[in-house]
Image 1 (cartoon, one colour):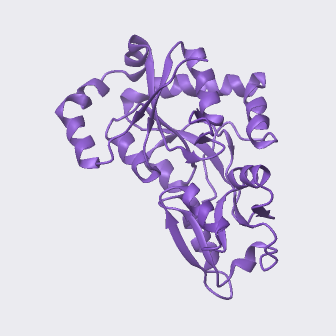
Image 2 (cartoon, one colour):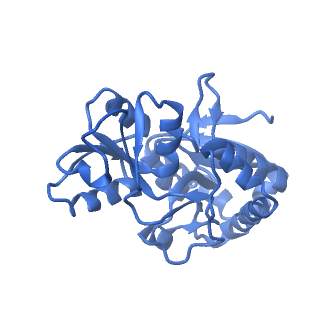
Length: 280
């Protein structure tokens, strides 16, 4: 396995933007694929509190579906992957500031995000569902969260969807926002919140790993949505994103993507080649 250089991103957006204008933007103005190929390195921004896509395992290593997928992408493109870690709310500003070439995330593909960013071919389903404490009989179906305190990630599509869903219930829900989902899961396990709203693959994985602590509430309440990797719409970035997308499509066609989905989710997902009109 290739050695991965794992960087801590600057948390101050003002510093990042300043650095970009101070000279970083000049580097990113040239053709991105040419630059990455020349350097032999592609930098990818992500958070590491979004298992099973991205997380730090018990040995302290960076692990997850994203790590495996980008390792394959790196092989296809002949480059090494350099990971840049930062909180989720800083990922999109970091992308725009030129701190890295693209975002792993992944992020839920939404209409609003598509207006500003380019999404590559979907890599998994992202439909939102509810996670509860194991054995909590007060929540048998999604609508049972009415009047309860529900956690979700700050600045996420999952938070927006559960808030919208809560408005349709007989009794409004209260939401608590978390910088990372690990904190939300910890509060749920401790009984400080009643449920967590996150995408079905994420919570199904967690419930599978800790069945005595967590349980998934089915069916998922959200509209059918998908996860995708993200880049900018800047003209100079499109050659690189085209190359990454081609690698992803090759992985879908030859079965590698399905194998990795089964490894991390216990199942594979049927995903479209492209999302042009998201449900959210």
